[in-house]
Length: 456
Ligand SMILES: [Zn+2]
Image 1 (cartoon, rainbow, N blue to C red):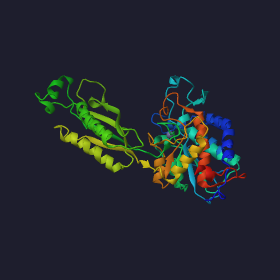
Image 2: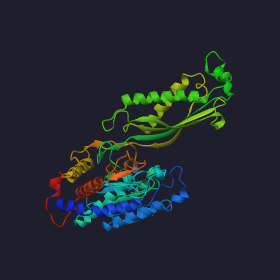
Image 3: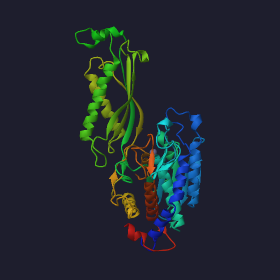
Image 4: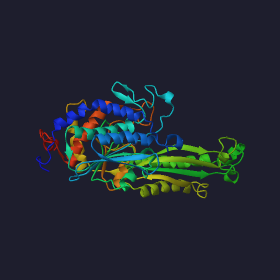
């Protein structure tokens, strides 16, 4: 596209974002004050919480309207509304800005030491509250970027879609991002506004690992605890009397721990630190007849694992490798050889990975460099991989190549005293505004410094 067709005054656009800092911060605080805890989060009473996501979505939809967008608000489940705002003339490249409005529960409010979980209080340029980092700040920065485009008089050629979704925190994409795609809202590229850090704020995130959740269970043979000696040593009668499932479980644990060490050596990717791909034994139970009383040998034991795997591997491939590791353990133990450990696959989430050379990656990096110029943030782009998983997988699988870029840091997400640095929110909004103008092609009323010139 020639500069004549794409002439947006960058200085004016950045000034428009800067002038909106105060109302942007105020609307983030208002959004944080709506306790839009995912009603399907484990341990949460659905009826007590359903509807709050819709309240939060209504606030964001109002911002989309303020940007001049046509807004479609819809729900798959009552009280769990998504909103999609559409801008632009539909004659250039299209772009999705996606973010989720649901948050995880705050936990014990008395453990929050700086501010109450849904206060949105600001201390030292940080706003505190559940959802500040993950990821209402990203959602708000995307909305205000669109408002700034309007304030600067920029009209987009291609379509910009502002997507505010529910259900992300429980992987319930059938209610959220998946439903939005199914309704026909797609584009040529997407930026999901999950927190970019670690390692550094506002990194350009090119992909995420895959995720698996599985349970591995073993059985034993119950008998009185006084038989321990006769069952554990090779000199005794052993399994003829009893087998402690907990001991057998630790054999499986050791096998999977060895696999994890092997991954640290072999499963490497330049976007993630060494050892990131891992198998976490995150929950465990076992006992005689399901009781937590140690006066019998345990007849059952189970460990629940969360696995983050290399982004260039498939779910089926990793499942087969884990099954093989468990089989090796079973084959080497006289009891487990017959009483085989049982694997139950509970959740799988595909990885996604984008090239740094892709147009959208380069466009986002260029927008960031321009937006960060003169700020306290480095203008060098940090390329990284997402630590967790997100709706970038759903968008990619739906045919929309995706990146992650947003304010906040996963190191404070889901914890007590979650916060976001308000300077990051501001810089993210500047970056989003520039990216939309550059990607979708914009026209401004006062052609000054050409966007084409400064962003290429
Ligand atoms: Zn999130």
